[in-house]
Structure formats: structure tokens, C-alpha cells
Length: 188
Image (cartoon, rainbow, N blue to C red; front, side, top):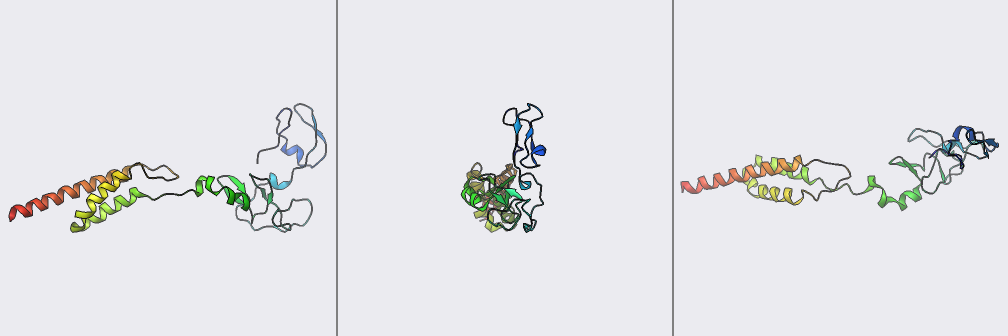
């Protein structure tokens, strides 16, 4: 949550307003103000804590569980949330309703994609251990590495070294296989 600021001068008022509803003057511009700030909107809580039972009216209650203390508020709709309802994702607190509504927009939840570079490198290395299979897998790995070079979509940056290694190993396998085939046919 952003810290509340004076609407006239922008001075941060969090600590002054925690008293709750008592009028005060902004220290910078001397504008008279009064506001209620619930402790849940500025409190720091441990991730994954059990929801506490609401004992007094001093704390705000969870929107979805009226008997539980609110530990955060939704960054989209603003409802107060207990630790059971709070979905902390990418530094933002979301309620279950807003989480479901914005699932396609959250980068962390987007498709992580398939790691074609690792697949091509694994096929190239494993097929080099079995000579006959490399006659099929080496050209397939070479084609796959070139085909997926710019098509791999992941939420994080990956270098191309696995593709380069897969292409190199596949090319070596193809060359060795051709030499073996030529040597066999020259003996006949």
C-alpha cells in the first residue's frame, strides 16, 4: 500500500493518522485533516501466518471472514483480507476474486513454456551414447534447435548456449555417421 499523503502538499502522513480520526494539521502546509487508517493497511505480517480471531473493534475484519483480523488489503478492489484470503503475488496483495479476474495478466502465472533448448541438448547427448539412434536423432535435434531458436517463450531470460551445444553435437554426430557409412560402403 502506498503511504497516505496530504492531498494539498503530498507530505506522507502515515504515522500521524494512525491515531484514528482525530483532526490534525499537516506539518508541511498546515492543512486541517482527519482520517482513519486501519492497522492492517500499514502492518507487516509474516507470510503464511494463521488468521487471528478478531477480539476487539480496534482492528479491521476480513471482508470474507468477518471474525478474522485483516492483515492486508487487496491492491485491486481494496477489501481487507485475513492471512487466509491474502494472495501475495509479485509484491501485490490480491483477494481471491481479483486474483481469478486477473490471472491472465499476471506474468508469474503465464505459461512458462517448454524448455526446447534443454530438450535438444539432452537428445543430442543421449543419442551420442547410442550410435544407431543418432542417425535419426542427430538430424532431428539439428532441425529442432534451429526451428525453436527464437520460438522459446519463458518468463525469464535464457541464453542460447544449450542450442549452440545441441547444434554442435548434432553436427559432429552427422559427420561421424557419414564417415562411418562411407567407410562401410568403401569396404564392400
